[in-house]
Length: 389
Image 1 (tube, one colour):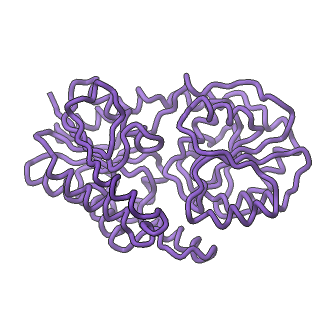
Image 2 (cartoon, one colour; image 1 turned 60 degrees about the horizontal axis):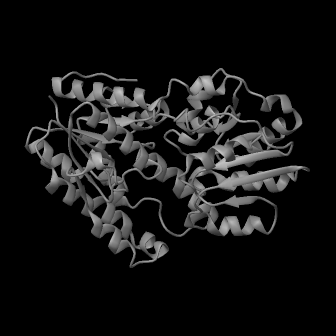
């Protein structure tokens, strides 16, 4: 029987990667293959007792520095990459495969290869060089002072993708950006994330207001600057824009600027899928104008609620809309394209009445995600190669 170790420099079970990691670990555990898990903090499920190593001091140290200062100094990346990587490598027990996220695996890869352990680097976004190019341009445009990635981060993450035995990513788009940077395509495995179809279900829209919904991190990478620019110019009567999520530092000034120029609702981030489901079901159309996104789990969640979506070609979830009538795909970084798409839905209400968005994402279950991972682990241990998706 194989043994799989797992590591993530985040809170196990939290939103985003914490949820992805938890689903992966559940599959490994249910298959009887789970070895050690290293994380910042874990969910308190009794099934994880005795196998999870928490690196609590990172959280404690992060409390002493304001987030903006920590970001400018590169403190968070230093702690969540270099320090976590060192601790995780020391914590590595006997196993056949170790699976962890990009930026956190350098020390583990070296320790594992000395012991004949196979390594998987999970890259949930596009290649780090692709993101850096996109975001440096955007940060200059909007006067953001701190860099999206330091040169040392880029070198570290690039090296991990080249040195590991396999790379896991979540879309063909993300895979292509890695191939463009010289990663062997035979080592890149596309495994789509799941969507909880029980949690995200369609419900009748509660009113007749034309409502545009954005959910996710409110930051420049997610393209909210182009959504807000378009919304200000449209000034549609009997219409609302609702944005739900954390406002990151790089977009804080932008959000303040537009709040004085146009009306929109800003809802706090929530980890409760029931609240998110209500937000999606209140929408006429959901818009996700990302400049870069490896996939975009919120897109699948909105489609599970049978809501039409507007996405960009620069995110993996564009695959979900190919040759369907479930929304529109637009160029990234283009406020006019965002505005034209929103106006099309506003002027033609029939576009808002999709029928098969939910069926389009139905195959994207967490069971399918876990099964694909287990196949990959088996192929690595047996020495087989090949793409799983």
